[in-house]
Image 1 (cartoon, rainbow over the protein chains, first blue to last red):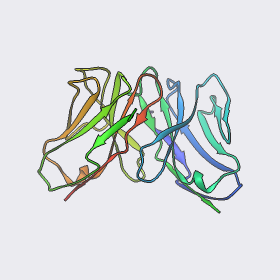
Image 2: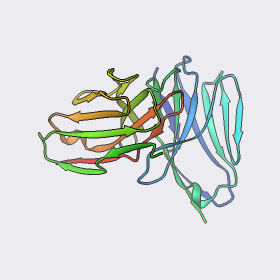
Image 3: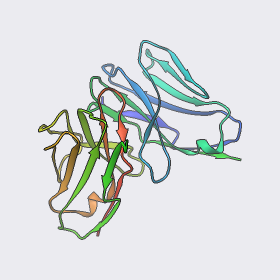
Image 4: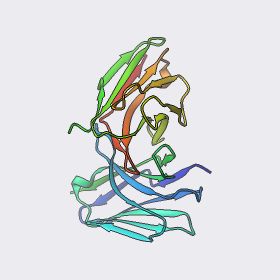
Length: 113
Length: 110
């Protein structure tokens, strides 16, 4: 009940294309859904996040789509660039605090120039 | 602001040796966390702290101990290292829903 399932494990996209990463959760008590971006040799950094009362959130080229009834959410990267090549983690949290945060296994994205 | 810093960056231990990983944050955050990151398994919470002098177990606490004597520091100890503890360790801190991560410590246990 505490799992967050993330897919795909890896993704190769052409420059300018759309990258889509999907996550599914089980526990309806989660109330905050962040996406973290991690470059090699660095720690994860918050990219974008959404709360379950909103179905979509967009920040620049990055969009989260959230389907509360299906308990699924996804990250869309529009006009993907080589600089977007990184590992992306979805997560589900019970606020307050991050000690009830469950991370997905990660998706390694490679954007071909 | 340095944010979250971790020392050391890399360490090699022999089975049975002990060591302490240090995490420091200069953002005056209440919450601090220790995670381990293993291939294909994402980030798993080892221990966390909701304030100075407090600690609690996370998802994978066995073989680790922690201390938070000062608000800005969170120490992770391995009393008797095992090869299964080979991993990349990340410290994070937060005051709300956003966690700020350090650069990580790569630990190899032989």
